[in-house]
Length: 265
Image (cartoon, rainbow, N blue to C red; front, side, top):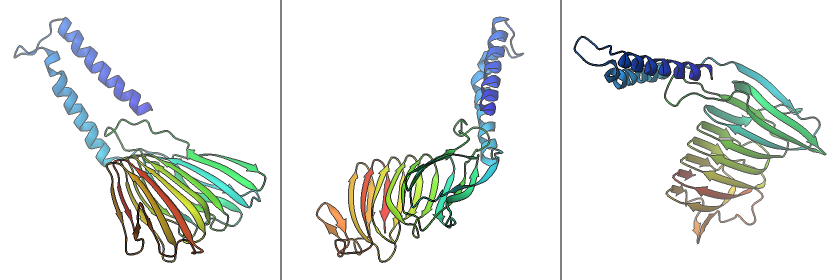
């Protein structure tokens, strides 16, 4: 926020100074008015900021945090994240729902509701940088989840890059909503659960572990969808593993997408 205020201050001073010089009749030795320099100076100033943004990164602190399970036997977890890299995998201890490192800090709420722990996680810092200008600020997260506790997981991701290795997790439900993002997700290898993917202008790669059966319903606009039909043959309006109905481990997958690139393999 402070850097954005500085940029606006410099821009306003530049515009005001050139306008004042023009009203006072101040001209360059070649007869040009100073206001004629406005656009060239603005382009040069913007170019400098772009170059600074390429080589520098905003200085933000990283917080290490954990979320206690509070003795709950099930959990629901909602994660909001954008403007950075997100990694999710198993590895939390038996007495905690999650732990990890959070650039920019973690803002979370945990509420015990009977045997269920309800948790919401979001960055403590809001990124307010101008696109392309100034040092880059990335809110990078590396999150480990409890692989034993049944979890209903919802993720709302903005303009980020996500590596989601959920192979070892015990999920009862999976929801992913993304904007302009690049996501690779390995779905859980065990249980029967539903996975709902809602995509904007995104790239999504879905990795299905061996031994997990799949049924895929896709509603796509200007999207590219590639499905490994050797594993998941097309059956009318959907794709489905031959043993889906009887398999102990299976995912019912729904994909809604706009201008996206999707690969299920």
